[in-house]
Each structure stands twice: as structure tokens, then as C-alpha cells.
Length: 248
Length: 248
DNA sequence: GGGGTGATTTGATCCAGGTCAACGGCGCGA
DNA sequence: TCGCGCCGTTGACCTGGATCAAATCACCCC
Image 1 (spheres, rainbow over the protein chains, first blue to last red):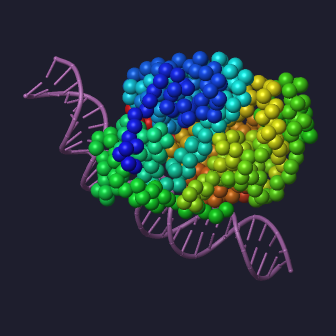
Image 2: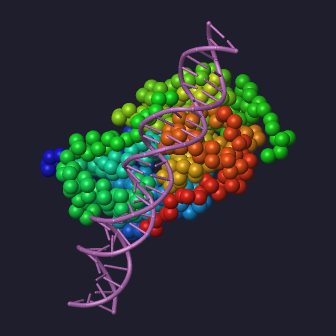
């Protein structure tokens, strides 16, 4: 919370010097292993705002780690329904759901001008053969993704509109902290309609809830920037109004 | 659909002779590799109805594959909200979400008397070191689980109550087919309240929708047994009434 | 069979949030 | 600078499904 903790993310051409490595693929690897890994990573591929990094159905060729910027992933089902599955920030890994059948199951789109590290899966696979700790980390990250989706499922299934928005703001704030940034002004780089789609609400409802939270002094909204004024209130609203669990 | 395709699942003490192996961990492995795998699997551990196979927070010691019966997985969040994440049937693997931090993130409960194969993760891990194809299969299954949850997210987020029930019935039917059983009488081994929790509805609504589908001749409900009379109608109802996708 | 218990169905009412519609603000190109 | 288009906000209204209540059904045990 202190203003002193404000710090810029230090980016580097190498994993070993990247300030995000503890969130990313290199976490838990020895220095030697990281050196091996960084030899096959192409750092800093730029993706323009609204451009696709990969599309649903594309053959899986690379995994991607976000360096700076933000992305969303979207699935479209046979009826043409669109669902945003997640928003991704520096340190996050994209493409893991493509291991099922070597094809991406969702589309990844940049929410702003974004740079990603590109990791070829064939070379990664060969390295995984040699490095058990890398295998563990990949499985850890997949398992993590699974847990994240389960948490989302719980939020969508059991919370009302205010709870959903509050949870999302808290999550975004927490993720900023993990990256060593101030938790407070979270930037909603996605549009209201995207927020609404992600949370299974209508954009009017998103707008109304944000307005209400601001009126009650819990947050301050200024275009895409949201200051969290009363974290405790936000936390309590994130659970209030949630459906009771029926005993089995 | 033909009555001739009715067949019992052939269970065996060994993976190599198990009729479910193409759905399960051994899929894609050579005969020799399967032999190695089955050496570390304890087949046929029984789990009584309503008993827990593992609990949220438990240390991850084993993965489990269902041989017969059915299970559910549940998460409880900090507010005490409960969400059922999935129902599992023969051939399904449980416990993959525990790789994140070596602890189970959900609780697994038997819906009926159920037998599971137990696979110790430490020994599995050592075997994975030796067998790249086993590693691929595990990653494939995790990736699959990820995609399944994404599909669920889409269903819960964008479909109305009738669409949710219809989708679920079709999914259960399809999974029966994958196991070589008749697609038609699906058995709802879970209670209405569990169905409701899973689909984020109230049990009264579940009941009403099932009644309506029966009245319209789409299905026939007899306690836990549901016959699918008009698959096409079910398919169309599974998408009708869904929310429009807002253009980005 | 009878009675108890929990699961399921059905009915009546209510409200959170979806829908439709109008307006305001900001950015951009001519 | 004006005008247009895209967001975002706000208001009024309506509906699907939640909620409350009660009846019925299935199952088990004595």
C-alpha cells in the first residue's frame, strides 16, 4: 500500500534477469536450467492492440509468456456464443490448453499494445525431457490454471453482480501486488462489454455496479483507472449476496 | 442407439486388459509402457456412497481413475460457498488439480458405491521421467480438463436454465457412448440439489425444467433414470435462449 | 403395512438483473 | 471546428428464475 512500493517491472532480454521469472516458467529452476530455457525463448515479440496472438483451432506451435501489456482469451462455441475465459498480465503463460490435441482451444487477443516471449513447444518438449524441474513447473502452471478456472466457476455460479465485480477488482489488485506493483490503482484495460462478457453480466449492469461502488466510497472510477479506496468494504461485498450452499 | 450396442464395461485387474484404457492414463502408451504403469496401480479400491476419496487441502499422494460408479468434486471457498465442479465416470482421472502445490484443491465424494484405481504420484513421477509418452498423456489429460472447464464456463455463463439442463443431458449421454454404452438411458446418480448446484440453478428450477422437457416429449424421467426420446430437440434447446454474443 | 424421513414436484409471489431506449462524453478525421 | 461513431452512463420497464410454502412421492426400517 505504501507509495514507496511503487516500482516498475524490470524487463530483460533474458529469463535469468527478468523480474517476472518467479511468476513465470523459470520459477523453481536452477540457474543452469534457466540458461538452457532462455536459449529457446524469443523475447519481446510485439502484438498490436486488438491483434490475435493465436486463434481457436490453430495448431499449437508455441507457448507465450506476457512481458508487458495485457491479453484476453475467448472461446466461441458451435452456436456462435462467445465467452471470455480470462485476462492475462505480465508473467502469465498462454497456450497451455492446446496440449490436449495440439490445437489452441481459444483465441488470444491483445487488449493493448503488448509484448510476449515466444517458446516453441517442440524445443520445449525436448528440454522437458532433460529437466524434471521444468516438467514440474509446467504441470504446476497447468494445475494452477485449472484452479483459477475453478475459482472463476465458483464466482460466476454463486455470486451476484456486485460480488462478481468486487471479486474481479480484488483479484486484479492482488495480481498487481504479485508483480511487485502498488495494489491500488488497477487499470481496466478491457472495455465494459468485455468485463460484462467475462463475468456473465450485461454491460449496463457492470456500469451500474461500478457507479454504486463509487457512490458508496468503496472505489473511485476514472475511465479505465480504478482506485480501491476501501479494500475491506470491497472484500465484504465480494461475498455478500452470494447464494447459500445447499447442504447435500 | 441400437439395442445391440448395449454392453457391459469389462473390468480387469490390469490396465492392459481394462476396456477403459483408451479413455484413461494408458492411452497412447506402448504395450511395454502400459506394463510398467500397471505395476504401480492398485486396482479396485472401493469407496462407499457419500464417502470422501480425498478432501480439499489434503496432501496429494495419489491420482485416482474411476473403474465403476461415479463421483463428484466440490470446492468450498472462504465464505463457505460450495460449488460442484464436475461429475466423474469410469475412465476419468481425479486429482490432477493437486499438482499446483501438492495439495488437493477440491474434495472428491462418491455418488454411489464406487471403485477406483489408485496411482501413487511419487512412483508415477519417477515413471514419467522414463516415459515421454506418459508425460504427454498426463499433459493431454490436464489440458483436456482445462478445456472441459472452459466449456462448462461457457454453458453457465451464456445459457438459460433449459439450455443448461439440455447440455448436461447431452454431455452425459455422449460420455456413455465414449465408454461403449447405449447413449440413451442416462442415470442421474446425483441428487437434484447437486445437479442444481453444479449448474448454478435452484433445485426447484431443475425439477421444473425436467418436467417441462418430459411434457414436451423430449425426455422421459423416471426417478434417476432419464431416457432421451428426441435428441435433436434436446440439442436445439441446449442452445436456444442463450445470450447473444456482444461484438467486441 | 405403517410411519418417519428426506427427496422431488408443484404452486404463488417477488425481485435482481436483463432489455430497450435515450443521452452524454471523448477521440478522430476532414 | 464540426460531425460522426463508439463507449459509457442512466432511466423505465419487464421477465426468468429465485424464494417461500405446501403437497406428494420414494424408500427404509420396524
